[in-house]
Each structure stands twice: as C-alpha cells, then as structure tokens.
Length: 227
Image 1 (tube, helix red, strand yellow):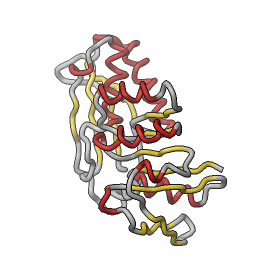
Image 2 (image 1 turned 120 degrees about the vertical axis):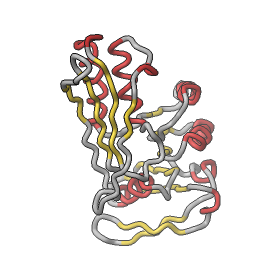
Image 3 (image 1 turned 180 degrees about the vertical axis):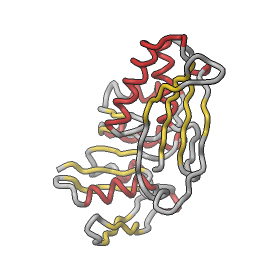
C-alpha cells in the first residue's frame, strides 16, 4: 500500500490525482492540503464511477505527511520548495510536477535529492518526455542551418507562460545546438476556452519542420496544451 500526500489538492491536477487514486489498488490518500485558508474543509471528489468522496484538507505539509510515504506536489514555485523541504525533513520521497521554478530552486531540489528520492518533471506524460529527448536529437542533427522557435497553444486559464513543457523543450533544443536557451524565442498562443476543452487534459505536442519565408527552414516545436 502506497500512502500519498497531495499538495495543491484544490487545483485541477491535485483533484485529478486524488480521484484516480481512489480507484487505484494499493493506493490511499494519507494527506491533502492547499492554501492555509482551506484547512479543515471537506473537498468533494467524484471517481470515474460517479461515486462521491470527501477528503478533509489539512493545514500544511508537515502535518499531512505524518502518515504518508510520498509527497505529490502540483502547486506553485512559491510553495513547492517549502513542501518538498518538509518531505526532506521526514525522509519521504517526492513527486513534483510544479512548473516555473528558478534555476536556484531546481538546484535546491538537487540537494534534496541527495537524501530522498525525487521525481521532477514539468510534464508527466511519457510521450512528452520522449519528445524532450527527440527535440534535442533533432536539433543536433539539423544544426545551426535551422532556426528554432517554441510555439505553444494552451487554454486561457494557464497560469505560467511560457509553460514548463515549453521551457523544457527549449532547454533540450538549446542543448542540441549548444546554444543559450535565451536565444530561442517563445510564441504564446494562449486563448482556448471552448466547451469541452478547458476541463480536459489533452496533451498533443509535436515537433514539425516547416518552410519559412525569411529563413531556409523553421524548426518549430509546437506545444498544444489543453489541460
């Protein structure tokens, strides 16, 4: 049995993780919390069978980790390190999907990882993580004769722009070309809000090589995030 503690329980990812864990064998919710003003409230969840469930929200990471095996953090750059620090103090593993972390914050995660297991990724999709690897390899093979841009399309409630997925793609392309990531431009296509889209998690990223009027070729890494 794996006991999880979910940080950011009121967010879309936090809620979805708990809804999935309810019906996942050998998994239980040992703790859940969000902003301090939500402490003590009952969070209403609905599993895939349409059955309702309640989860009582705690006050902070330290109190909610007491019966957990692992922290799952989908919060904000401002909150993440404090939550992971609590897991570190308790000797517990952490899974981190929070984006927008600075280089210094990522380095702090590396320090934590010397003593506790940490999985950190801006996107948890296997397909997207394969794309990260492919983007670097494609950039290495195409070389400097190609220009690189990151174009992303996501819903109009997306908090961070560029997204963590777009930044990681740029990092991989920059590594492949031996560039500084800051020379790669980001084009933001924020604005999706149609019915049936804003509540779904549908990641359809791809790398496309297209012709450009003012360059020989354009290597365009397009991230289509409707989550």
